[in-house]
Image 1 (tube, rainbow, N blue to C red):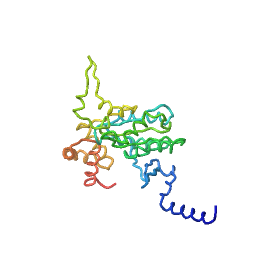
Image 2 (cartoon, rainbow, N blue to C red; image 1 turned 45 degrees about the vertical axis):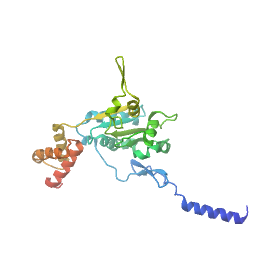
Image 3 (tube, rainbow, N blue to C red; image 1 turned 60 degrees about the vertical axis):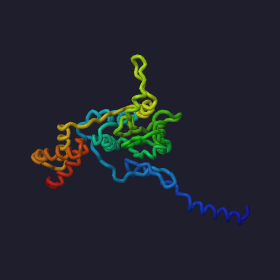
Length: 288
C-alpha cells in the first residue's frame, strides 16, 4: 500500500473517531452496591454506579412483616447459592413494595448482594446486562420498579423471554424483582371477560386474558400488598414520628391531624404516613 493511501485511510479513521460515540466506560464494581443501566445517545449501554444509595431499613417497614418474610427468604436462598425465584410484588400503592427491595440491599450487601435498576424502556437490553454480570462473584437483583405495560410492547416481550422462554437462560447469579400496582402488569377490561368460555363445569379464559396472565405467571414468587386500616396507619405514623425524635405526648397529639392528612390524600398507605410524619415533625418536634 502506498504512503498516500495510508494517509487517506488514517484521515478517514480520524474522522470516524470524531463521529462515532466513545466506548461506554468500564463498570467500577467497587464504587457502589447499586447500579443503573444507562443508555448513550446512540444506544450504547453501560452499568453506572449509584453514588447515593437509599439506605432503607427493613425494621422501618411496618404492617408488612409477612411480605418481608417471603421476599427475604427467597433472597437468602439466592445468596446461599440455593434455588430461588424471580419475584413480582403487586398491590396497593405506597405499601412498601420497592422499599422491601431497598431494605434487602441495605441488609445483605455485605454478603455480596447488588442491585441493578433498569427502566422499562431498557428491558430490551436484559441479555447484555446478563452478559455484564456473568462470572462476577456478586449476586445481582435486576430491579424494575412500578412496572406496567399497555400492550405487547418490546419491553414486555423482552422481559417475558428473559424470565422463561428463551433457548438461553439468565446467569445463575442474577434474579429479577419487579413491583407493580397491577397484578398482571397490564390493564384489564370488562370486555375481556366476555371471551371466557364455559365447557361443562370448567371455565376457560379467553386468549386476551391468557396473554396478560402469561407474563406475570413467569415470576416464580408472587407477593401481594393490601391497603392499611386506620389502626395500622396510625401505628406507622407513630413509628416515623418516634424516629424523628417526637415524644409520646407529641405523637398522641398528632393523631387527629394524621387522620385528616390521610383523608386529604385519599390513602392510608405507609408512604402517606411517612410524608405526614416528616411534615408534622418538621413543624413541632425538637431538633436532635
